[in-house]
Image (cartoon, rainbow, N blue to C red; front, side, top):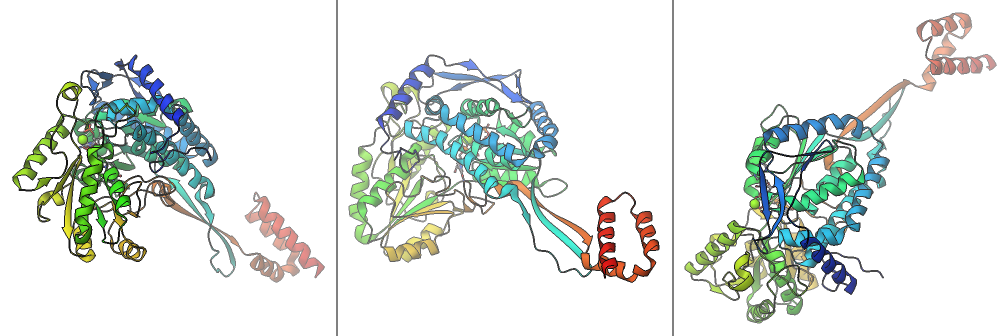
Length: 571
Ligand code: NAP
Ligand code: MG
């Protein structure tokens, strides 16, 4: 079987994947620092102000010069999307699906150069970087597939039992209009491309605003869409600060729907601001997480330790799905903790483009400072560092934002950091006397994104039933709480982690980008027409005259009446 890259298969990639990636990094590094435009109505748009996009791997590296868009660019982008909507929304779904698939295939064709840029800009290791690009292609293809499998969501409904009439009822899902997509830094491709693919396949036009930390890689994504040949104005791309440009986009009354993926606080503010208008419009929110991994006394501890370490420290703990809390039954606590320590100490921290590296840098100075503050707070609370606890210094480490993978033990469950999303390579481990206690702690958070469990088969049923989370895994060494893939593990959260209740890359997602229209068409029933004709049959010529007089231009009506006249005559 050919190798299929997913977050669960990425641990043993074939050699050619490494070769392709290495070549792309070398090539890309020779060509850094170019200026990139915004894209509005198919045109390159430049702002008066610019910003340099530095790499967290080495802050001396300027990856790109990007545009600092403002409120007037927000206005232009939305106006372009509005103007393109009537035609795009009426483009047959087959053509829309074809273009979305074409864009997905362009992403796949450019996977190495895009993966290399991702590693340099986000600091993801190579397999995570390639994974983000492949996931995006798969998310887009999945939305296309859903539209296709549902035949454009044009579906006949039941016929209501009317007496004397014949009704045709059809349900049609139709696009809303202009869809705004605001994405976070950590999966800049998938969390821009997943919503974009769905919005476009559904027939909306889009305005994309990426996180400032990852403006370059999303610009490269926008270029793939442009090369796929979406008509001008269907896809618009703007860059600039969330607090100004982003805010102007959210407040613009011409936006018909939003997908926001990012932190709880920004998302909730956006939710309130977006509600402040003349009627309710759809908003898909995908927010933070505080994901637990529960380990039972009956767990396979090798699988548990492997899955927990991967999910705690993949992408430096900066995944919304990261395993940030580990809750362990007392009888296996010591052994699990020993294994976690052992495995974590073997992880390589460094330049994420290098093959051996598992952890790259965290995203920016502010996250780096957060790491120092949180570890200080943990120290003050009297907890212990099982591993890590410090930022890395010396040599190349001084050039970027490198933090040690940190497991914390002996932090009381009452401490606020058991509930607060740190979004860093810091995971707390706690001991419980039974599984009910573990579940109570696991569910006692504002979030409900992902969750993992290791235990007996019987216990897994209980876990799935009791846990409050949108994506749940049992006995999975590939990742305790991370590694969802479109079509396999559609991704979305409950409670404070997500608003729609339907997961991206799943069966019910693309429908969120459409509103339903029921089309009822009523005609007189055949039997009624027959009866009318029968009654008036003796006055054949009069009936004929009436029909002619009342519906002279309706060919169908005349035809039906004349065929009925024939029936009557024969009788
Ligand atoms: P963030 O700080 O909330 O930013 C997300 C996006 O919102 C960025 O593009 C940001 O732009 C923009 N923004 C900020 N203020 C805005 C405003 N007033 N109006 C409009 N847009 C605004 O999140 P992040 O640090 O990039 O990402 C990490 C967070 O995302 C974590 O909490 C993580 O759990 C969450 N996340 C959730 C999921 C999920 O699927 N549930 C997936 C991934 C990440 P600027 O960068 O220019 O400020
Ligand atoms: Mg941020």
